Length: 120
Image 1 (cartoon, rainbow, N blue to C red):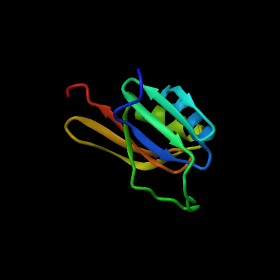
Image 2: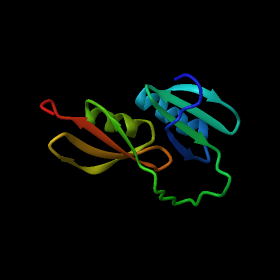
Image 3: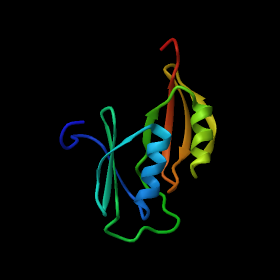
């Protein structure tokens, strides 16, 4: 990724180092930039900026941002997420193109995992 990203996701977190570690380990992301207030991660054309919030985040936060990322093996990535302090949510469903499972990162943000079907 050269220069500032034109597209990406901003996630506010009270513990940016811990949340960055979650994404680095789970999705093999790389640190692009790190300051005391933010950590910018990249993988291919995806950029996630994890930022110290300019406001207080409630303890039981449910946000409206939901990431979706493609993985080959849903069960394996669910187990890995749990080992890294995340959570696997119940159920897997499929459409004609891909199967979907949901997990939460170590801050409770939801992530949709997609595994494309071989025939799609």
